[in-house]
Image (cartoon, rainbow, N blue to C red):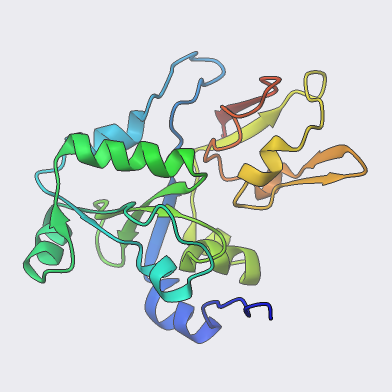
Length: 214
């Protein structure tokens, strides 16, 4: 018997998550057109390196929903929130090196790194490694169109049609469902892309790059 897929209800999303936070995808290990700069964790490492305290815990979304499991240790608290989670026994304190190892591991697994700020605060307090099948904010964007209210993105993917071989590798890496493969033809809907960069380093033809959204 096939297990029924679990998900967040609209009421749960509106009351507890969506509407109380904003999220920004953080691309890593990406070459940017124009600047030719290798981010190599760029913004992500800057956020973590400037933190006074970093905490680590298992993914609450995947523990609750259970549509996918590994890796589970990609949720990081920053500064005040990290201290609060550690004091409550909900997370453990880790070093910058351990935090970056976790981010590398979740990136390889195809999870999107999201930096969250919460209602009434400007500073980033949480970094998640998110999937569209369990994560509250990603699943909300795909199911209810909350993306314009929850997500902001500095970058967007650019597709080189002359290089693309329509192999479909990028389709499996795209958590935002911006890529589909139909009759051996790849379709990329740029409006759905949020510039996470997961599709780029696995493209065998090097046909994808990130460009500034503006």
